[in-house]
Image (tube, rainbow, N blue to C red; front, side, top):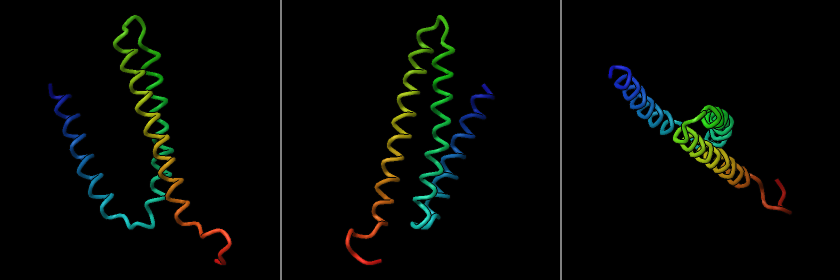
Length: 98
């Protein structure tokens, strides 16, 4: 039970620190941070694939691993789409002098 409480405590601290850090970041730095966090999120896909592959005889572990792969893939692809959209906003209009 104490391990579970430690994990919950760590999760709550991570939420609090994440919110505090993101609210303090200037808008000019959001694009580089998004790109970096998307690259790091790719690691979750590797972990999800490992979890799905180690299912063995348990179909529940395989299903949960597959669900983790799908969620991690949606996170990474969506993050790159948002980053691409933000980078297009910084580009000048075609035909205008910069």
